[in-house]
Length: 305
Ligand SMILES: [Mn+2]
Image (cartoon, rainbow, N blue to C red; front, side, top):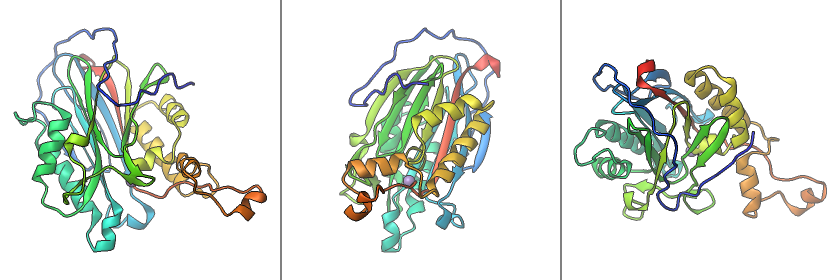
């Protein structure tokens, strides 16, 4: 399977696609699910489309006891809202638990999805959620909000990411924002950090049966897009796909001989084994140990629920 397009999120991009036929269905009260390790549920329930969502989070092997530093949420408001935040681990050196900021950011964001001022705009959601935080720390984040007419609105700060799969091909891809290698843009408790103004804002018109793959860098640093396509294609449910992708990322992350996207990028940036090892044909390889969060959303007619 080939990657047909990887749009760079420099400006707002609208994919044109067939209009989705609105349909009528019963109205359920929005329910928000926060930081569950593994869940699968249908979110969004009024006329039009909604996301059927599966999630899976595997903490960094050294951070299992504390649950890792990634956080995420899923909401069924309108067509569905999904978001991931990744706490920047450098804060541990300052005796700050890096999980606090990312979790608080996601908790505020999940409680603000229906806020009038937010107006169902991902960048506004990031602005208000960030402003509400009181924890010390910083986090990367990506937010995607689906309208029932199929318009998916996204905002991204840092190196979490999104892939959109249509008929077995990746038709949309976010790009990481970073200051330098391994130092992503991040929302912070400190004034030196980035803000909602630095977020890349993207819009894609989705079609029924499109698949949205959202993850922290722990996914995309360890799993190639071709593997994402193959795994999603081989799974029968969004829950299975999320779990299978997280497991693949986890196994690659622990494999020192795997030539991961992360090690390829490191070599491209000039990091490698010493010259005498290169002479012997060796190179820098290995996955990247990290927290791994995967959210899979499949676009469905809300009648099909
Ligand atoms: Mn990470």
